[in-house]
Image (cartoon, rainbow, N blue to C red; front, side, top):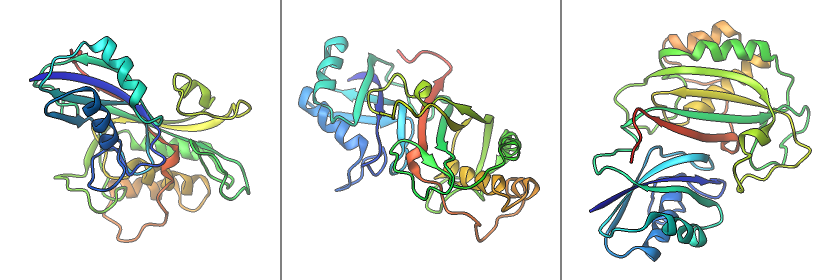
Length: 268
């Protein structure tokens, strides 16, 4: 067998997540179908992160196992010619057969991009979310700092995730004001209005994430910023007992990006 590491980027707007699901549009299904047009024999793929419905990826790592040997440089060109326009392959290189994109990563980083256009209702923008209420960003930044460390995030995940523990190690988390074009500048997929030069970013990196965890955290932080709950109440949700009822709705997936997965050694 032959083994390859593909780094792909995608607009997840019209997909039900990365992972293959029968009769449901997924990134993995479309990626696999494109591979089968170019490669004969048995082909399997394995991703670093599932990513949920509507979530995007700047860099998603995928291991490709094939019965055939290929010449990677020319293959990458041909692959991008037949992939759906919402998916781009940035790199396609050989890797070790033992490589496991999910379990071998030492950390994953997500970015949540949003605007704060007041009293706007639902702003029509595909690749950023919007919070239409007055926000106290100093309080929100305090919440982001509280997230750093080892915590049980049982109050910040959706039902249906089959995990042994809700404890995760978060190495960094911050909120900042950015130019979204700087984050998305290396992509042809995420087209933003040229006059949109200011938005906000929740950047979070950790050893793993629960189902919808980043979007739950974002919604709860917005509540603190809007004065609906206090920073101390937010902290108690991280470190305290499980709450049966949440005060927030899960944040829109349109602002969430899998930014990168990091590995201790090069996977070639």
